[in-house]
Image (tube, rainbow, N blue to C red; front, top):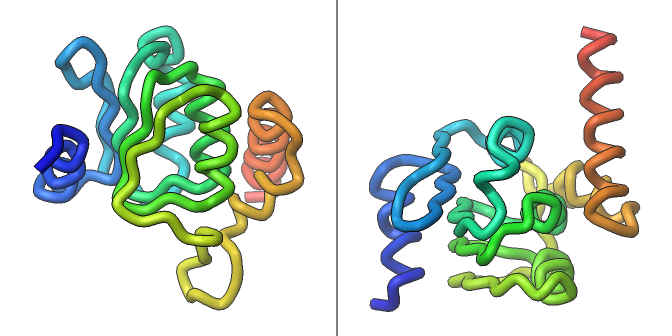
Length: 143
């Protein structure tokens, strides 16, 4: 088994959805679902993310944009989308994935993930980050 595959197995064994490692130590981890943990890591530990390895349960275009924004060194995942692969490749960030699918689906498997849709409308990591923060602010204001 390759080193990156062992990192996926470790993530799954620990019941985590996200682990960020740098220089052989964990700088962030979470068992929360969806994109929130990666966004929190970016907001709270951005300088630490630069040059780090992101091991994430699912990496679609949205997560890939956040990894680009965080200037990570590599992304490791059991499941990635073609959109994520494209975003990371353009940024020069290696992607190690067990499986790559056309798109990440929503929880009901009835259509694309809402974050994938939002990311698909963005032209850059910065553009997606701004759209995501705006969406969160609007949702928070209406709650």
